[in-house]
Image: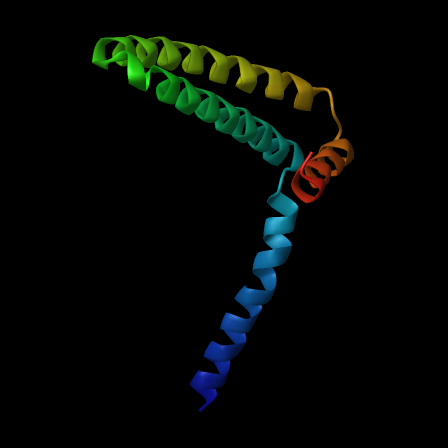
Amino acid sequence: MKTLLKLVLVVGAVVAAVPVVSYRTVRPCGMLEKELVRRSERALAAARDSVREATAVLGNEARDAADAVASSVEHLASNLAAGAAAAKVERMSARECAGELVRLKVKGE
């Protein structure tokens, strides 16, 4: 019985400590940077899909060429978006990053 009680106490302590430790190690600026990159990648994927739909009627060769161009543009734009997000976050404080992250997540702007 004592062993079970000790085990429950240890598990309870770990469960209570995890939120505190994760709060201490969470970086709002890193989270904001990832969210900005994720949003730009979603927009690029939507643009790529619309190009695929538009070129579907032109045939396989045109679709393959459009896919190749779209892939190159997507990689370039993704790298630029990642750099822009890193530059934006670099100039912000943790409080500003947290506020911007809340604005993006909650308000959906």
